[in-house]
Image (tube, rainbow, N blue to C red; front, side):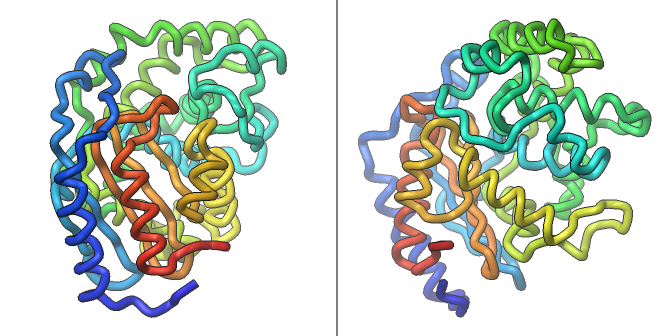
Length: 313
């Protein structure tokens, strides 16, 4: 992987990609099953790169906040591992699912143990684990707190309108939680677990904030975190591995083939990618493909990786 970081060249690449994405007609469709996301304009695109040192570089609508949705699963996984360590893996697996992110079929076959923490069932178990810890009860939301810490930005908030929208339409996630409750893999109750999960998904961040907040993955642990966060190099490496194999649902293999970097997507249209030893990338456009990944954000990440010769392979 190319290790030099030429800021002017990276800026020119981002500017060029942003300019071309503005003219793209094929943008996919918004996640209209969440009513609050259905009204987001498709005519937006942002991209940011946060190098290990220095300020982020950005282009387009990189400072527009959007609902991070499943990208929050990266941060909740960090919180859960900090709280319970490797015992988390007794309740959630580490294998790709090969099924849609909200599928119940595999969960039923495997008796309530989700394949990985990045599908919805796995993220619900992670939320349940976080709720089990007494200290979580005194915090506003531990995932929100971590996002603010990593991005060094206390202004990051939960979009209450998106949260209410999720709560009104999230019956499939409730079904997943009730099934796992019946199998003994939800301990905090369905109501509390669902509310906590929807709150983390409703966090609003921009590309600049997301790139900054996920930069810790690129240098295998962030020494700038407060001392009580146990974010070790080994843990960061393992999260990168899960992002590569499971981060974009049943399109994760295709994303690895096209982009060649650990990625995590969300149905709000955002995608983050870790570039080990260099930095982090965040791209956003609300239009999704049929697998739930942003059409233009994925295309932009592929072009960035190719132009800058960034790949883990």
